[in-house]
Length: 581
Ligand code: WT7
Image (cartoon, rainbow, N blue to C red):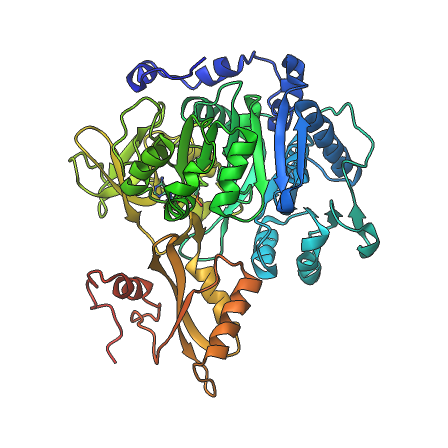
């Protein structure tokens, strides 16, 4: 049966408790995301339903039922408990999108741990910064990636457990634990941690303009937001075969690649293999995918490969398409309607919001290029760029802001209460995180700019800071700059976004060199590789510009804004704050 009621109908008398109705949830049931995504589905008659259809590199395929999900996540929960790990401990998952990633994520939640998923392509420096910040106690990884952990272990006194879940046991070092869940005995029973609504669940690191990445902490009751949006916006129904293309190292891959859909008992597909348009179409065709949640960069790549390739595959099972992560241009929506007979529905949200906020609700007419309208229950507002007062003039650009209190909202930046507070307009200087997240007189300010038209549709304008969005992934300029100046040739560095047809933005570095170094092809390669290995392929500059001197403010801060404006051919603005000499 369809979940679609008109948007207007949904808005009337909306209350988040409908999310409980959607799940058939009764008071007194265990609120633990790990349990809700596996045991609860089995207990309600779904044990034999397919939970996961997984395909790896080279075409290896595995299928798991909800009972498999239950038993394998039990095994991880028990293992972690046996290792002495406790509720509240940060436990990192650092692996490719292999089945154990999904089992261990639920297992961590079952034993009360805080799951800290990190993108497996992160280099040792990106990894170290995030493990150090979180005071991570254990890391689950694979033989392929464990080397990066070994390299930084000495500097992480709180990291006590390294668990390798795939590879060759004989190649492990002393103190590392090997655990192959599919070879291990079945764990039929596990008494899941009695989470409170406010018990921490997931810690996702996200980049800002200044400083190192921050850990956005989520809680078990986020599930209400994820379930309802997965049901109403992704329109997931019991017989769907759903494919979320995101990696759980990013929030889309957990909120909508694990939690929302599995709490609803939906069959999900995972493709752990590099992107080609042909591979993706085959995957949809072979697995009879019905609902597909992806990102603009992928959609633009598919567009570039043309309609003939679409026609060469049977994609007739597709029923609903949605997108997130970057602006979805109008052409991509129009093209998808032509090529697949279905438009992509843009959705806007952030790591911090935990779930969709502004959406193209199914059934609501799409204005191509618009993000749609706020999800029911979301108090969205546009604030003046200077005064942060609400703007209600159609077409005027302002800051996207939300009234605190939606279920999946982040509850903290891990150990950074001041930065958390700085995200709320109107907050008192001494307000604590728990006051901020419930105070509906405040605004959580997203850091993005938009306008709203006379029909109430929201249009994305751009970010209000210097964070670079490359292919839907945020990378922080500060993190890149800090790594750049560790290269022996570089004296000072600025990292900015430069326009790119497919990825929207890619990283560009503007650098000054130390005495004795000259620009050359070799130096460029050496710098690129240095960043790729230490941080990640996403953070690697695609272009390096050498300058004699970087533009700075009087106080010595590098003027990224100015460099970015030059790069994008935009108004440079007021230069009076530049150094005079
Ligand atoms: C930032 C959040 C939420 C999942 C993935 C990203 C940009 C996100 C859209 C959209 C234009 C978008 C914003 C936002 N963004 N969705 N539909 N249109 N921009 O999570 O890594 O926290 O990034 O991505 O700039 O603030 P994230």
